[in-house]
Image (cartoon, rainbow, N blue to C red; front, side, top):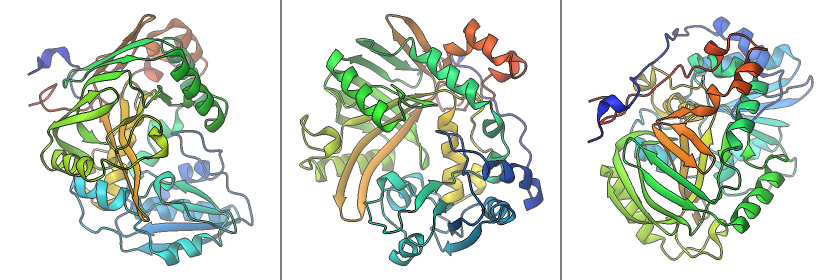
Length: 409
């Protein structure tokens, strides 16, 4: 077992419990009046726009009510659909496979979406992984992945220009590096040997899809994957869009998972699906080989104020997912995905996982040190932060998770 003394101690800032819509209204007005940025909520709503909320009974209703009220104040036309959702669903693996990978919205909800200009999804799904549908009206879709306490957290008020500058400084130690070593106090130990051609291909895709940014999106710095040059072991106990699972070891050989050890129900589900869909050839890994067991994402997140909701254990369904998933935006967290394969007309399999105490090194230095993003200590970042307030406060990672066997029993 890793020595607990090597890891920073768990920490959760004091969080107020939100009990009424009025507590959310000031932030709701901000969110519906600002432009969206990657991992930073905002939905620029204009008078006269047709807004549809697709909600469910397990979502945080205060969030939906506040945003709806703010949109109406702005002069938008607001309608909402409230689905039954997955009431009382708390199991992380079932959330992953029932709420995320499956297209669980009924057809009539998608038909209603076609009448809107903007569809805000407070009922959990991930629009990029829903099997593609044709919409004659071409509505815009946006996820609302927040609970009430997260809606008014420091993540949402953090200066986005500062977060973006942190990205730039972090990328200086990552971009185009041929060798990257990634270890973690849970047991991850991965070597990435990346060719100039892989870097160029990834950069071209990121520049095209990420708005001209070589790492894809702000707050989520993507490294070239899939790659035959990735080998080692990825160890996790967190499903990004699900919750905690028993410690799971994914043995990687030439970019794909060759073996799964442990993981309880999660490990069983991985082993079963990898075998069942071993012959599927997906566009994400076309040319490398079939299967849904490829490492298809490795991304470093960069916002020091992201956290989990302390009320996670009280929640189920959509709100439970949102209470857990926002923490992967925190600086120093490494967000990965395994899979990406359309296995039926309504089922897209992908498994996102997180690690919290990584150390990432390149030939240019240490990028992350036991979960701490080192660019937060860079003097250039500190000077930039001083434009917005006290650098010590702005660049401190307020939340540190408790992970079994690392910094907790």
